Image 1 (tube, one colour):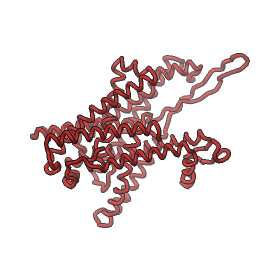
Image 2 (cartoon, helix red, strand yellow):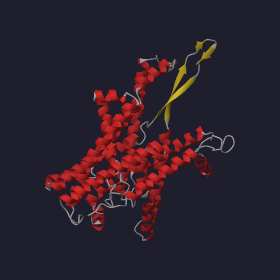
Image 3 (cartoon, one colour):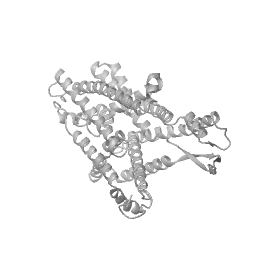
Image 4 (cartoon, helix red, strand yellow):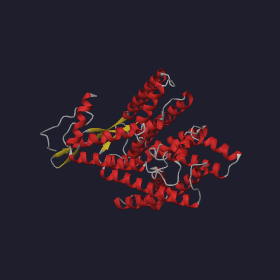
Amino acid sequence: MIVLLKNFKNIFLVPELRKKLGFTLGVLAVFRFGAHIPVPGVNLSALQALMSSKFAGGLLSYLDLFSGGALKQFAIFALGISPYITASIMMQLLTMMVPSLEMLSKEGEYGRKIINQYTRYLTLGLSLVQGFMLSIFIESQPGVVLNPGFGFKLLTVLILSVGSIFVMWLGEQINAHGLGNGSSIIIFAGIVVNLPGAIIKLVSLINLGQTDPLVAIFLLLISIAVVAMIVFLEKGERRVVVQYAKRVVGQKVYGGQSSYIPFKINPSGVIPVIFASTIGQLPVMLTRFLATSFPSTITNSIADLFNYGGFLFFIIQTGLIIFFAFFYTAIIFNPVELADNIRKSGGFIPGIRPGKRTSEFFDYLLTRIGLPGAIYLASLALVPSLLQIAFNFPVMFSGISLLIVIGVAMDMSAQIESHLIERRYEGFLTSGRLKGRLGRY
């Protein structure tokens, strides 16, 4: 830990890395500022009382995870990055199913720009729909809206939609000029910002005698164990040895070496959890919309089943996480293309014939590794929430939050590490000594 803290100064010795970090922090500051500007016409005290209720509070608290606290204030960024993530998922599915989009995705930079533009249009449409549903839900709650009516709905939909598009633009700016994945960084910042408040709340509950100190210690130990487990499993990988045959070109001999291809236990990272959580909002919001617009015993019962913490909610979340773990792995890994590239470069896996046999081996390996990885993701995302409901922990102990925070932090650390090594440092997570004179890169 001491070595790590000493090496932290290496980040500020590289001008490009320093600019990227400063730009990322500046964008996050803009996002946090917008998360505290409320939409006009809302009674915030009544909204806070609504958030503390059992049913609506569970729904809004779950949706608030991806808005960084903006939904609690019903701020202009209340929708957060969720519409953009949902649009990205839909475009990736359409790219695999629609031949014209599939051909467009193979046209290099031009095709990616067109698909990204389609994703932005789809984000706008989803923002309008989600903003409309959220405005109806808020308006249906007594005392929350000061002047309910068509004017409030129209103003709310416009403000929330523009706010969502602006958050999407902030994420794209982080991708282009900052560190890490923009969408993940924005969600990461929204989760981390609630950590100090949760700690203060826990300490105050202990001081007031409302929480047993042993329960707090038990919670801390479980948190440390879960964090250690996540880091350990995220670092786990299966290494497949690739041997390259010797080739004689002129008077030089090439090849004859061996390398390896790392297959991680969780190759898709935290993306399946983010995707599943975003898609999982849709049935929760839809059933709540039906229950408030057409109140009856049947609609209320259906809404109870799909509510955050309900049985069907956890079933849907588990299925979505496992599905997106395999789906995203299939996107980032193409066994046929990987085997073909190895064959063209003169490589082979010992004991396996090049070509079709190699691609079948990769497909088999991804399935064998992907299933435990998907179950591990689903367990870490849902078991802490089940424990919270069962034992009534005094602070939010969300497995989804832990996975996102740790996954994004590890990805950013790896990116900083690569920047430092590229500029003749030994790294951020290693000894961190500068190779050569200071200022030479």
